[in-house]
Picture 1 (cartoon, rainbow over the protein chains, first blue to last red):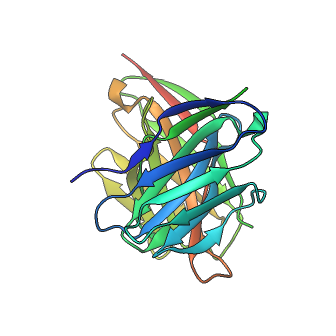
Picture 2 (cartoon, rainbow over the protein chains, first blue to last red):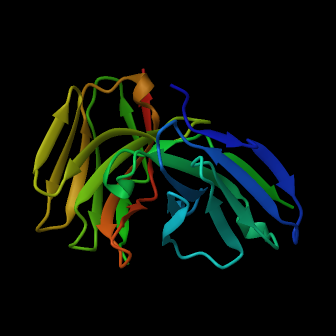
Picture 3 (tube, chains in turn blue, red):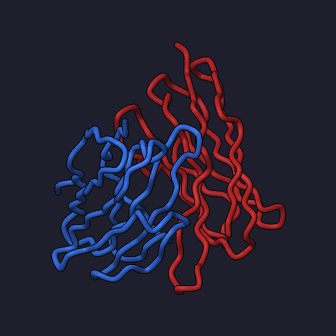
Length: 114
Length: 115
């Protein structure tokens, strides 16, 4: 069974640009959540999608957005990039119970903003 | 919202020793407490979890304890091995206004096991 796949694995952008990250969950998993990981703040919750609907959103500015497609694949977008957006963005999928069961994480997309 | 504090931030032990990582949470409504292990270059992986109706859970060399009254929970690793070296995260799951829970993570503990 294939794990959670995130693309791209590494990317470099400059301030003001926008970026789109992609996540393919484990087959059969309908819940996808996104986290931002930085050395100082640990893992911070961005948002969670289930069956194309956003169920929860973390405390991030509106520049951070996401969506989920009918095949459960998800994308997140960050517009008007700032230096502080440099981080590892992790996607996790679950069978549907959300944050009350095991999350399966991908290896992340490492974003560097120059 | 929920706040999870994790200590220590780094922990160095000798192979064979025990390691203990402690976390506290703020929201009494939190009801699920997983622990994740993250190895270098990989995503976090669940190693053990505990629900609020249980006080202790063991899985081979790993155990987790939960004190709901004090709002703290701990991870215990016995007979540590070099392959236990990684960053460990605790987390607490609490219901949101949406009716669905979210996970709040601690900031992590880097465990280094020396041979």
